[in-house]
Amino acid sequence: MSPQATLHATVHGIVQGVNFRAFVLRHARELGLSGYVRNLLHQRAVEVVAEGEREELEELLRHLEAGPRGAWVERVDVEWSEYRGDFSRFEVGF
Image 1 (cartoon, rainbow, N blue to C red):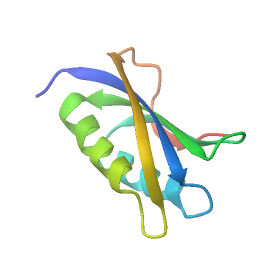
Image 2 (image 1 turned 90 degrees about the vertical axis):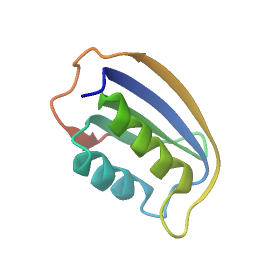
Image 3 (image 1 turned 135 degrees about the vertical axis):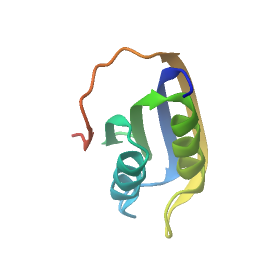
């Protein structure tokens, strides 16, 4: 079991209107992570905050860097922090 952590990622590019949030939701839940994904309205970006095992978070990050079909990921800004247990499940935020 790897240590737990929190991932805060901002995904830039063509990531809105291409089912990016549903893509992230599916992968995060499959990986057993908690947190949220939401569009950043004044940017061409999606914000992801996820908590769980570091190994699963790194797998989610690989998915974020690839994105779903129709998306074009320009870059992913990443911040790691200690696990806080702020979330009980993974959801789409607004």
